[in-house]
Amino acid sequence: MKYRSRTEITVLILEAANGGATKTKIMYKSFLSYAQLKEYFTMLIENGLLEYEDGTQKYRTTEKGLRLLKIYNQIEELIPSTINTSNKEPF
Image (cartoon, rainbow, N blue to C red; front, side, top):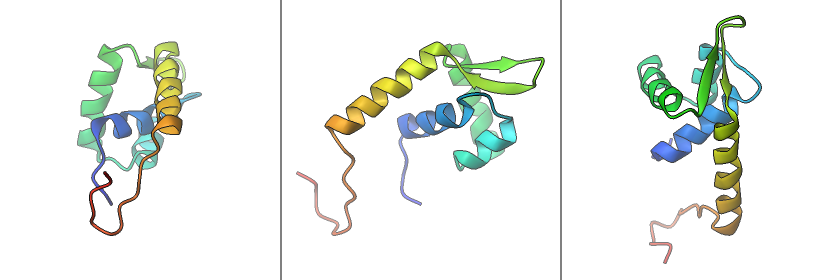
């Protein structure tokens, strides 16, 4: 698997938690270990991007998190990631 930035991992977690998901489901969808996931959860909850629902025992992307996803996707449309298979610099 290629190197992923913290932003890319954050987006994967927020997408997985959109609509509500368990810790295990998010862990598998974002391809993270449990230790890595705990670290990201702490950061995302502290920044108001992710919330935990006691009643359902699921994590859910907040409105702020959904806005981040929307902005990230808009940026991806403007500046698509280039897959570099020839080991040349993209610019």
